[in-house]
Image (cartoon, rainbow, N blue to C red; front, top):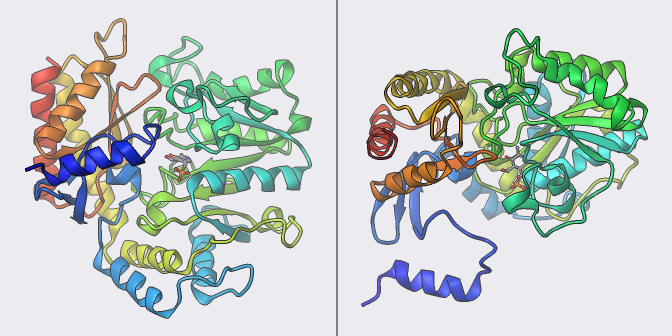
Length: 434
Ligand SMILES: Cc1ncc(COP(=O)(O)O)c(C=O)c1O
């Protein structure tokens, strides 16, 4: 008799487009905390968190209770027709926790891409300027505007053009593979100053509405700019009336040990986009920004049928409560230290590890064929992921060259689960990376 997995795989191939691929044919039955159980009863430790969505863990009892309670009351009225308390309370919370002491305001939508789209719309509306500057190695989503902002061609952009006009890309602060061939700190973060040169040859500041960046570039390979980078860039932007949009969709909600990764840089962006972990898997995203900018848009200029879904709002409020009650930021820091210590010890042992980078528990290792040439070890990274999966650990690659192994475990992971996951990764490196 065919296994349930085989039957589901067959059916899926028939009825779901190949364009929407999955890492593995592991059909999930249930998940709790940092553990996923599939339809065959196999268990997996989760170091992927559904791509950084499960920071508070799968099926957290507070989130489940909030969802159930709200679902029994009502699931939709459309905020544009009749509003509700949960959305207002959540917005109040987000305005309070987002960096910056200025008054703020919120706009809710459903997915990360939608939040980025709307941040761009708001920035254009407020500044009355068209151009947006993004970074190479960036990922901002898969709708046509956000795909235009995204950098990597294959698999994301290939075949889907033409893209939006007035989008420009500059090299990012990828110190391990510096675009300018420089070394930090002697470089004095020349990649930030390059913006001034870019204004001469590519687009004028007078026609630039916003600069958008992920504080840590997630899909791009957990590229972590030096501390001075965003201070410098933000100053250049402010000098020219250009808004800074921090895309915190992957790096936010405590992922780096602070609520927002940009807090590590001491910068208060004019606009921030949030999604993924802040509603624990419910489709909810937000743009939080300076009130003056957010409120510049005319009534009905922003909207959508679903955002903010009331069930998702209650889930997000539960997430905020969990962060406070369970001191999750504190826990995140401890997890981060533990993982970093482990990865650094591996770097001494495994030649394949070219660089360890990230902040707090948002950590990754870039694999290279040899440390001199830095040739990306993409096949080896894929093999590590496969090896781990076969032994019960879900872990993901990322990076422009698909050679970075990233760790995004739920922040509620137990010490025992974390150690078990890391020991599987070590076995994988021993088998593949020596
Ligand atoms: C930094 C960043 N921005 C935007 C997005 C797009 O979010 P969504 O897939 O919810 O549209 C992602 C998704 O991975 C992301 O990591």
